[in-house]
Image (cartoon, rainbow, N blue to C red):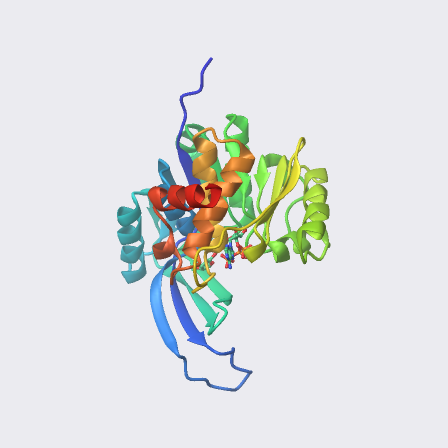
Length: 312
Ligand code: ATP
Ligand code: RIB
């Protein structure tokens, strides 16, 4: 029987990103003048939904918002990107926010996130969304919602034969059997270390960490390595996929989300995982050449152009 499912369903959090640019972070008790400030849409799940839709996917986003200014910002970015929101409103809880320090010069970041209403998404919300999850080709989530909520959604997806992706960010303890619900797990270097105890400094350690994640039950592990690309390890393949270069690096915040969102769209189209990871790397390379998180996600034609230029 042929499978006509093509959609990407993403569970996660929307927050407003409050990004402060400075040469360094302040010490305790110290106040620094910023060299720049920007407020914009963020939250890993929402960023991934925006990235997947801009990359050409048919995307539904499951979340909770407060009835406030930041909640309205969420609807604006989803409308801009073409994301289909499925949102529960939460009484007496505000939409969350993230403090983002962006280092002058390098564009590297450090983040504190308060998920706000997104922290109130429950396993029962996932059971209410069962039909949406079961109708997807790809289901993806992260760890900004409660772990039991992500797990409940992964169980529903797995039970319906939906391809499952977990981006285990921010780093957190996982129940032993949770990786076994994941066809793909996509940590960055520090998240891979938190899950495996292996300090990842490059492709060699990433291979060992990816193998360890597979031993814990993940189908395919993809460790993202910043400017060095990703390491992919499946039952049949183990290889380093280099990053693309695309001009000056302006801000790396959301690079992992750009990769995950574009990767999910490519998988939903039936591309093989290596090709999908290359597509994700191209999307992420473009995103780091622009400021902001969700607004930096590239359109499909921009990703295709970069891939064609690099191949040629
Ligand atoms: P963040 O938490 O800032 O969103 P992350 O730590 O989850 O990012 P990274 O591993 O830093 O994710 O980056 C994800 C992907 O983005 C990389 O695998 C790579 O393909 C791409 N990328 C990141 N930084 C660069 C860069 N400087 N140049 C080109 N591509 C990059
Ligand atoms: O991955 C980047 C995101 O992490 C930011 O947009 C911020 O909101 C945090 O959730």
